[in-house]
Image (tube, rainbow, N blue to C red; front, side):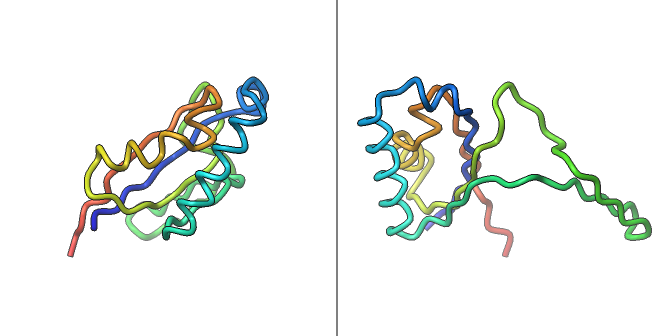
Length: 110
């Protein structure tokens, strides 16, 4: 089955704007995704890595990407297609709490 990487963006302000009952639904939905095999995690502090021509390793604290909302977490899910992946993440906390979720298909490179 195809795999997809999701990136959730959201902040505490947006999270606190939604009703506690909806938060509970969103967290229960995440827990179901985990039980069904999704690999999920909350984003920690990033490190940028460069190694030009495999000759000069550079690691710098901080994100390369920038957005209006901070990265909140990541997941790897399986879905039949993009439409199903969208349905699967449509009730996650970032999606319902005034954030956004990107869904990236992982291409098989074997």
